[in-house]
Length: 281
Image (cartoon, rainbow, N blue to C red; front, top):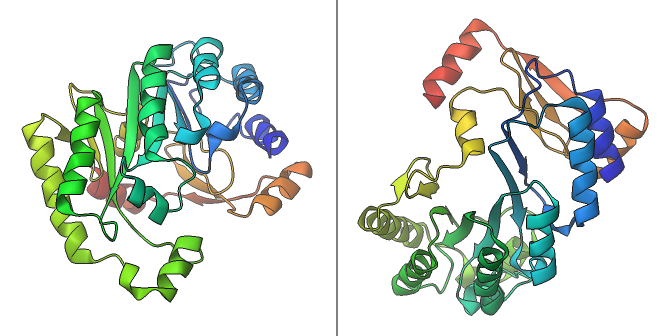
């Protein structure tokens, strides 16, 4: 996969007219499984084809169970990564067990503390509401903990069951665990009230920032900025066209082993641009 990703970077280096990058985002899947050496290999290939001198933000999505003290310290000291997006999901043990997360509640707390000790100053954490068995008070307590930890950015999502996932299969056998829309709606309102009371600005549907700590990378999508997406399922936009990679990992690797780009491209018409402007402005 890493070989294929590096090949794609080389083959698609000319997709963007402006080679000066201001953000990089390692996301989707579990990029925190990459070693420091593997991350720096990716940065090395990027440096050959793009100007990284103006970077403002480099984010790594990470699972709490991957963020031990040594790995976090090396991320901070030996890579360009300066922002962590941590998949906490909940600080409550019962929720993590239900969602079959690999980490526990103690690790959820510890990884944030370790990251701060290592010198990271920019964070976002994911929290999920609408989980079966989670009371409104339990959801509110998750938000309180995040606030007490000093999180300046929160990404909060309603629990959804993706077809084919282990969780979806288990819930299909145990209907009492089916998420209820009424619970999610009520807890979303609790989230909105908490955000207003604690000075979090809702700048996207699921994203909340305090002290203007918006995600620079996320914000670029809404401003119509060009971006290059690399890896299976990744999407790209260069101002005139959109491209999207195939989702299948093995087909992605096979295609790039043959020096063939595994993507489809759509050239945008004036009408397409107008419709997108309506949607995103």
